[in-house]
Image 1 (cartoon, rainbow, N blue to C red):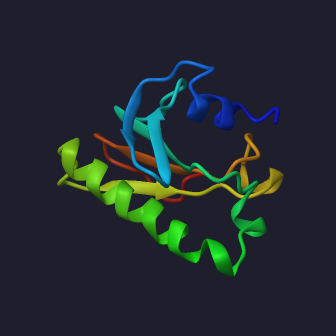
Image 2: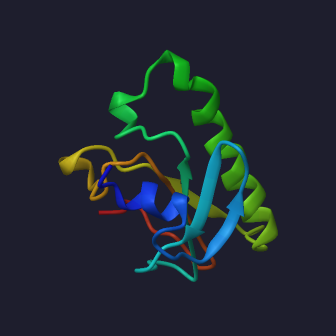
Image 3: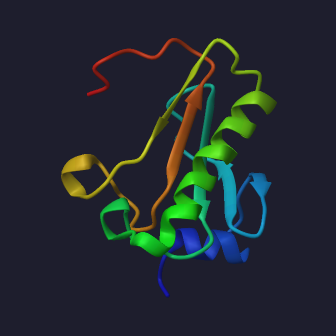
Length: 112
């Protein structure tokens, strides 16, 4: 598979690992948009949220539980944002479902 996130999970492309368990892998974004900017990805290749199916429900919830855990570990008690970009119009640039965890500064609305 030619998926960059699958290669990061496999360890063939280096990353700054923030968390790993049997279902997920989280690492620092290489182009951070906030002081804390982590990507939380399922180890199972799911191209996008639009392509997740009923069998992916548990991992979708787990991604958010990991985001909460990492937000606590990174002292984001004043708040943080989680984002899933889906498809080209949604801003998705890597075809592997991922949650952005952003924090450490005031977030603005609308985001863009």
